[in-house]
Image 1 (tube, rainbow, N blue to C red):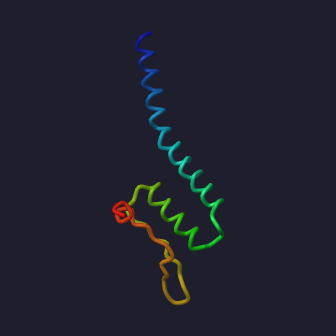
Image 2: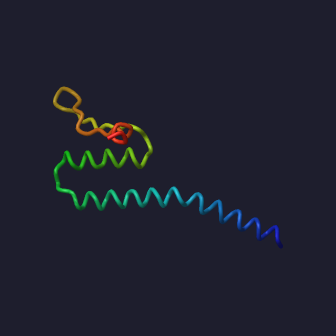
Image 3: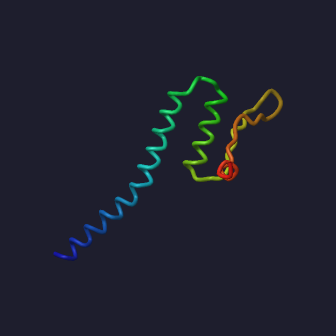
Length: 87
């Protein structure tokens, strides 16, 4: 009986630890959606916001949004987490 209770507690603990990253991801997506809803429809502002949020959510140090122009690639937004941390 005690072993079954310990097993149940262990299983509950594992489930909780697996759910935490999912909750954090959902919270981050909700925060982004709220920020986007409050932001003007300025395309550059939206791209910068999404790029920054992607870096912070995915836990990378740098991201860039590059769009294809008429004959070349155009960097439209970028976020450098290491540089912004020093500012």
